[in-house]
Length: 141
Image (cartoon, rainbow, N blue to C red; front, side, top):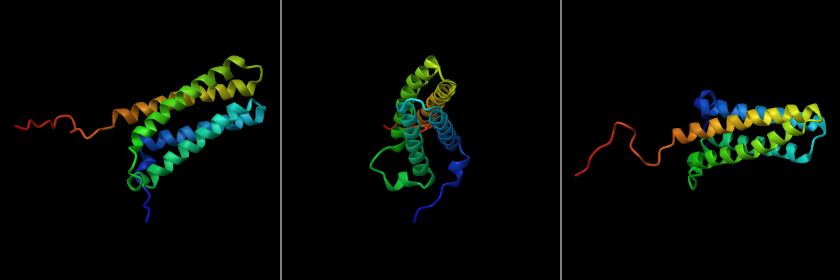
């Protein structure tokens, strides 16, 4: 049976995931209403879906069941790659700006890019690769 991780909802990691989904949804709505190029809308929808999948993975403790992959590292790589795509698309939306929806959506993408970088930095900072925590180094002779 799958248990729900209520602590994740109140954690910083959970807040990052929720904020990423909300901003991506706002960008998708903005680009959809403005009749922008399909690539912007597609990128926003993909960001919502992938972030939702990682959110559910951590919320339902599925990383314990699906242990064939080191999920925090995969999440960090996803965040960094998403930040790159969002940065490029955000700059294109802001620079292009003949339509106000493109400008607003581009700003949402740039804010989302910053959130992705912060999420990845937080994940990588707290990641341990089978190391002992600082201050617990034991010399074996």
